[in-house]
Image (tube, rainbow, N blue to C red; front, side):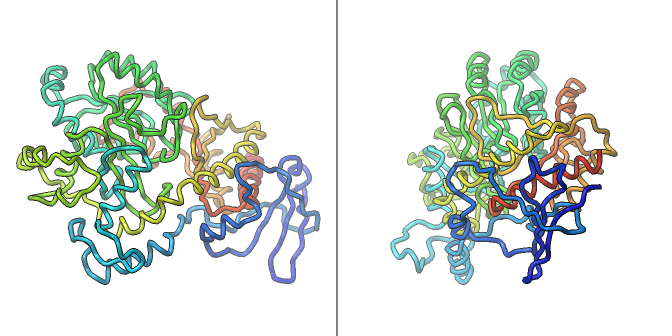
Length: 485
């Protein structure tokens, strides 16, 4: 086996360059002591990040060493920390004990003029970000999907009853998505109808229309898995043609767009509600959390009430319909599911919203490097985004070619050993593999989707990665593929 060149430095670190056969595409292997997570201010000053330009010109190290394998010292499972302003505000709220969604406004030492409680303030800011009139802060994106579906079921009750017959109401959705989506459908008492994926991991519009006609379903939840947007123009056309109400699962697609239209926008595709996540591995990190955004008065009202706004608490909302008579007419018929966001979650989220554009730019910069590097490897396939779709790139997916499960497990095991853990969507324990959804198993006609995700690898690209570390990740993938071939 080829030997790695490297040297021990005085500070105890090692630098490595790859075996000669890897130097064509692997400019540098770096193994270092684990570092503290960088703040976004530190990242923005990093010389490795230069706007959106992609640089692959990294000078190789040519010193000698006995070791011949790349390793990554940085933890790619490490989420981005909450900004200092969010930590300080969270602590301030906790000291008052008024964490409840409707606990009222607490004094803010850094904003003496604050007149809204932190959840309402954050809902307003998030609605501005996505371009919607109304926003409901919730405890998760899964709750947002459930409430969006619940609100549509109630609003369109008569139409759906006429179209659906005697059985449960059918709801179309991706066969390739996270288990929370079919779970929300089942939670709402409906029956999922699964639509196959294309080899770019997005919903197959031809199969969507075919299933829509065959099932008679009048609601669809379109998931943008890992920030990959499908042909939303075509989705909107199908929905309009067959009188289907569109809900978007945007858990992974904050900052993404289709032909210039931001993910989840009400127009021009006719989306009635969109659902976003602030779980730790998303663009905003609050551990758990989510938002339902909409321009529809009744959907917003029903979602606010069902989330847990009882009596007259709806009056404390800001990004909500101003017609209180609608709240009054619906509140006594609406169950309280208690899915509210609390004040500390909002306090963590609020200072991250102005940082989003910078996060998008950094993710895209790193993604472009990884995509170019991995596309040079013949033993994997890296599906591109659809033309017209713009992603953010906080993760990358690729398919292993010509491998069985033993070889696939060997590959991801080798990567994990070298500091680059990843998952395979088709694994028997992966929550994105529909064969694991025993609560609502898809029919056999979804096997084409399984053929696409069976050996699809999912690699996270957290924002704290430097350009050098991004290259090292690519080196590990390339090395591990060859070592386990």
